[in-house]
Structure formats: structure tokens, C-alpha cells
Image 1 (spheres, rainbow, N blue to C red):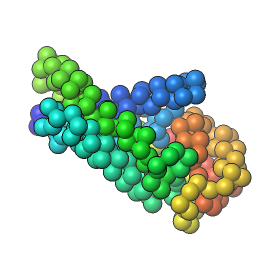
Image 2 (cartoon, rainbow, N blue to C red; image 1 turned 180 degrees about the horizontal axis):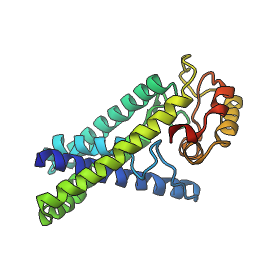
Image 3 (cartoon, helix red, strand yellow; image 1 turned 180 degrees about the vertical axis):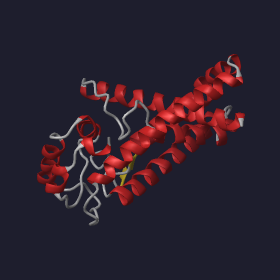
Length: 230
């Protein structure tokens, strides 16, 4: 029981940390603050949580071998990012991110640059952040950790249901995507359509400005309203 609690809390903590790292990265590159990251409403990115779990439970044994930790962390996180991009595209018929403009990328899903970041992050997770997290866990009672976990799980679960439902309502056409994002013209039409809807749809576009479908049914998208999921 406690093992599951620890796993979930580690997942959640790094999902939140990953979210704010993305916000910081965007600010450094564009000098703009954009808190709309990911398709979930809350300030967390599950892919970072899963990546941190892989590093924590499978790569911690390499804590004294920084080279191995860097290489393995980079490899497994890039693999996770590639598979996540691939399956999200298959499920939702959307390309969520695209590294095609970066050098040394693979199908626009991963790139050498992000791989380096993942390698550095792996070292920081194992050598710096995890020891702090585990010390905090030891200071708190098991009962308190269980209560915190239940509350956080309910929040993220409800968020996941609502967000996924909304995405599926937008996922109308089932035609296949090309390897790259769709044309600029389609992207602008989607942008115009999504901006007409309420909080979540506007946030979705801000989070993924290059989000595309190969053939949107724009009239049906325009008819969709946030009120339908209330």
C-alpha cells in the first residue's frame, strides 16, 4: 500500500516540476510566460512523472556512474517521449509537438537537444531532487501521505476525464495524419475555431500552438461548447 503511495507521489511531484520547467524553458527562449502547457487543465505534465519514475526505480543504481546515468536517462526518456508522441497521434489524430525544425531530430518526435536535457535531468533527479523528496516523505506520517495522495489522485483523475472528453469531442475526423504538421492554412482555421470556445479550448491552443489535424470538420468543431461537458 505504502509503496503505491510513494510511486504516485513521486509521479505527481515530477509531473508538476516538469510543468514548471516547461514554462521556464519557454520564458527563457521567447521571453513570454505561458502557463498553458499540456492538455490537462492542472499544472502537471504526466509524461515527466512517468519519466521520473523510470529514472528513479531503474536507474538509481547508476548514481555513482554519471556517464551511464546520463546516457541511459537520455535514452529511456527519449524513448518515452517518442512512444507518447506516436500513440497520442494515433489515438487523437493530433500531432502534439514537433521538433522538425531542430537539428538531429527523429520524425519530429524527439531531438538531440531534448535528449541532452533529459540526460542532465536524470542526474539531477537521482543525485539531488530524490534525496530531498525522500527526506520529506520520512518527516510525514503514512496517514498524512495517504490523505494527500487520495486528494491529488481525485484531482488529476477528474482532470484527465474532462480533458480527454474534450479532446475526443474535437477529434472528429478519422483520416490519417501526415508525418509532419498539416498546412499553415488549416492550422489558422483551427486556431480561429478554437478561439471561439471557452476556457479549455483556448488553453489547449495556447499549450499546443502547432496542434493540427489532417482534415478537420470545422463546422462540427464550431458547434462544440464547454457547456456540453458540464
